[in-house]
Length: 346
Ligand code: SAH
Image (cartoon, rainbow, N blue to C red; front, top):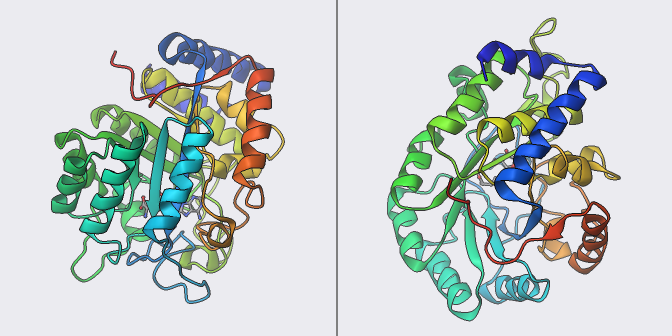
């Protein structure tokens, strides 16, 4: 697809015309990754973080949240739920927390791999190559790190450098591929200052990085963050240049990601579902996506993992969510994926 066409789709507002984009994306999804929806159980193991990402509610400077770190036993209890629900993967996600040590994570990975059939996916931030190597050796299959935006000046604005930890997510993503991980990345849509041209570049970068998973969601303003404290429209671009952080924008981007990276796994994220609690998951799944990440984090911790306010289904127990999800998928004619559901080699 030519860049002009991509830009036209990103700006398209007509329901009728967009119908054609949704059906193209759905057809490519069906042909490339089939009708199975893979479920990955998300475990938010710690909300401690050393980074100062300007948009994120758990960034190091937010003194208004209570911090937690799950124990090995607590994590394993969630892992057993994933097995009981028939999921194929667990994702261990956290702020960039160095008190979750190399050895601790390696031990948890080894336990999951020896006690279950699950694939293990990590989302622990920009950890050093030595740790990524150790975790791969321990058996981790996938790693997820969004680059958030391919616009270098916007990236720097929202990811301030730390004294000895410059932020370079692209370098980490290349390292992950080199180490043999299935690598996932993605962006937020509608960050103040984000242009349509940069979204077209984001899609190019997904291809250039040869990603296995692409996850995107709308930027949601968090009042206790530097970006959230700025006057609402302060850094918004004038006219039609600013990308809106809407549900529609997210579907358009998901559909285009499916057309441009046909064989990748694409989740419908909870940030999207939080904008449309009734049908967000269904619409995402019928416009290109093929993965859902049900949250298995115990409720007392889940409320504290507040990267943005009012995360979708924050009050649902994993059991309630699972029961409802099965019904919803059946009603759509989609089946629940079996096994780890890694990237189909194309
Ligand atoms: N430390 C891990 C996990 C961070 S949370 C990591 O860096 O990968 C996972 C994702 O949540 C982030 O990559 C970001 O894209 C998203 N996120 C954070 N704050 C957000 C906000 N205010 N609105 C929407 N998404 C947000």
